[in-house]
Image (tube, rainbow over all chains, first blue to last red; front, side):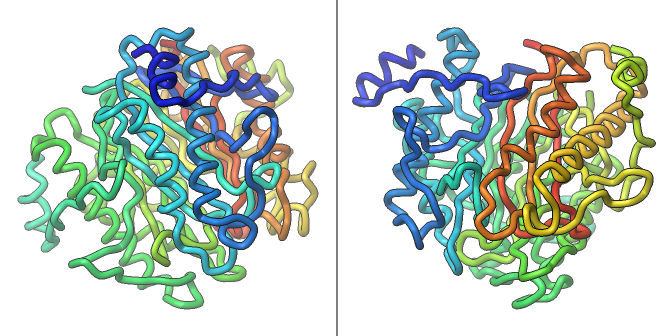
Length: 154
Length: 154
Length: 154
């Protein structure tokens, strides 16, 4: 896969890969998998959405932000693979953590925004396992955090 | 392993595998692992328990529901393996998310209901790594969500 | 790697490995990975910190406790590997769950305490992918829980 070309077709832009924040890194390649760190919905250096869903932001806003998390994660994967996706032909797992206001139980609708970007990029091979759960709060007040696992068909 | 036969011995029934809900799927096979999506405690199309433990449901009810999540996950794994468990001889990891009322700190007791089903089915090879944590809320108001990783001894 | 020698150089002590609590185990080796169960900040049989950060404990206390979770996890990995780390040369992923008081959004600072221990032990190969999220509560009232994945470069 040529990730940049594919994103261009979709009118999506690969963000600049995040830099290592501390002792951890944006993505690791190990055991035939690429494990991507939990990504926040940063775009051009700004957090897209903060605060609990649906109190501070709408489900739609959070779902779009979840899609941005996936783009950020793909940038991290692309960097660790040096742009060579040979042997990494499919999405494996998404973990979606949704900052949730009282009584919010539509975490799956927020997660759909992340899932949709993966299948747009990878096609049929983008269909992945997923866990979506509520959390009270996330780093820097983000409304959503998404971690990913990529791999190969086997 | 013949999963259906083993469940029959245990007087357990393999549920019908869930259908892909959106852009994600119930389970993915990759890198020598089967990754199962977060499963809710649905049985025969109905959610067994909703609301926070121990406010809305008891620990015992939630633990039983966690066992149902595992059965649903085994059905998902069985479907992705087309019923052929050759090379997938052991449980690897459970992630257990427990909707938790104020001050509830017995998430591990709820998770035991999930762990017990795995070891009943797989025997010694069913002993798995596990993370059990509290969450404020889960999709569709479920009291518990369980994700699984299956693999082979190595 | 000789884990005991390396920890000794760092003036750190490998805890006694935890015992299987129920139907799950402290760590599993599968598919070229070691998956370590969620570890609580126990030291010498006592929980270091309980209650939400930053209400009941400070960020600094929780970060130090997160480092203890990593030590406990390394003990679990060492036990499942029978002390032979051949082929397991790197940290792959940390999952850090932080019991969070109202409005607490510095989960990443708590997680840094876990990450720092990994890189102290493994050096460059200790840099890992990470997801850090808030939770309302954890088993036994712990302030932090850390799960780990170890593997090999590939």
